[in-house]
Length: 264
Image (cartoon, rainbow, N blue to C red):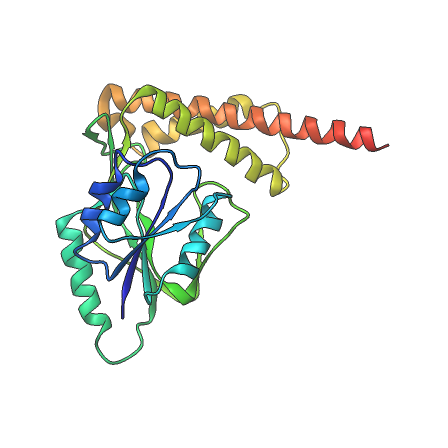
């Protein structure tokens, strides 16, 4: 059973070579869905690593992942982000798994969760929901589909059982404050659109209660205090962007009301 590694990318020349190198020990093929708006050397780097590059205009992450499932040829697909790395230990675990797949009989499992270790400013986090940060990334291609109604933190729907691997992906999550602001603002906008699409309505208390809930969860429920001052700063930052999410939800509702009044 072949294993495809799929990467969705745009302007990733800083990270993608290392991601591709980490994937090569386990991949029977590497497929990169590259946004045509890419303006750097990402495509050339991918081709130098023998990856198959497909021009794929970006609409949403779940739509891109479904496109990848369609384009890949392997029975199994491992989704990898450009800023993630398959550790040597994880590569060994996947190689052992591939050997079991070649045994007679149909695997009952349709997808595997992989623990992920997040790095902020070069430091591995141990609390705040950043570890072990399990990701459902290794899926049997014909038994997986992503929910395209969920625009952020996409959710895969499996036909079959789930299991867990033990070794890690590493994630170079954030290296600068502008990067953190840009990423969280993008998530806030996508989450607001998802909430509105699912019929969630803005309530004034959301602006206060949702950020407080997020901060409490990051610091205490998920033990972000283990990461000291950085854990506190990240909890406060993500709490702020919860407020941004609901502010944008309010703006979406207001825009819809104005559009409806304009139609009367």
